[in-house]
Image 1 (spheres, rainbow, N blue to C red):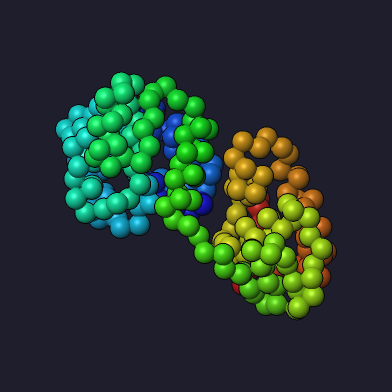
Image 2: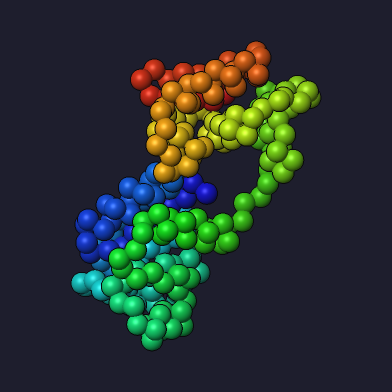
Length: 223
């Protein structure tokens, strides 16, 4: 579910940075706002925001007022962040159209998991095949074919090829590949990627040339 834009609205810079770091690691693009008014200005000018993380207690315009304005024109999923934990506040939030309600302090990893769950529910992705130069990835069947012949890939090799082909022409750092293929809390050696790339290229034969090394950074699927 990466590459989606998430708007983080919180008057605490440290909280925004914490959330941004964890969500960036999951491949999400982050936009920040320090109060509700700025958030509304950003939201109105950016139609591609997929989810809003919205703090309740903020200066200028609080979270409740911001949510009311958002709900006048959009059904974008909203997760409310608050220091309060009263049941009445939670019920109030759900009445206004909150999708999730998380009380501070919270585990960033749990919050990321909830973000992913909501995005998966609200934006079900169509299972489309990836196809380029005879390399076909059938996501539903979890099969890769090369010029019509089945390729015997391991699970990680399949996921690695899928990630590369889903980002054609994009230079992907080893860190980003680790975060997306091995998940964001993986602490392994980046040489793991180099090893898998080497095996993947060999299994793709001549088509393996599409996987190019980006010196000092990582790899890209060249089209």
